[in-house]
Amino acid sequence: MSVGEIAGELGLTLATVSGIITDTERAGFVERAPDPGDRRRTIVSLVPRRRAAVSSWIDGASAPMQRALDRLSPEERASFVKAMTFLEAELSADSEGSQRKNSEGS
Image (cartoon, rainbow, N blue to C red; front, side, top):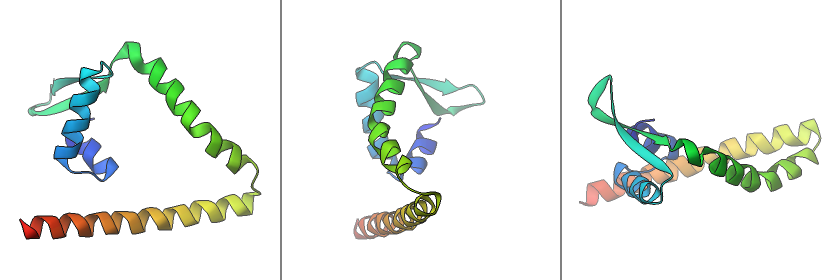
């Protein structure tokens, strides 16, 4: 993904994502390369030898949520997903509002 795409997916600024990428690159988890289709863009990828470690970490981090969801009926699960969708929209709106206030105050 490009740095801009990562920022968009995470709802973070380019500066914040660039800092995170720099830290994870130093730790040997990601690498940057010019986009062959547009040399102005930078593509960030997981380092192949680190993919298994990252997958293992994600699986471990998501396991408690999966176990909790497994205990819910289909109707309860649908309600939970609906509530989380609403929460995500509210958090995104709050984040966008904060970013606008910060940029207007500059």
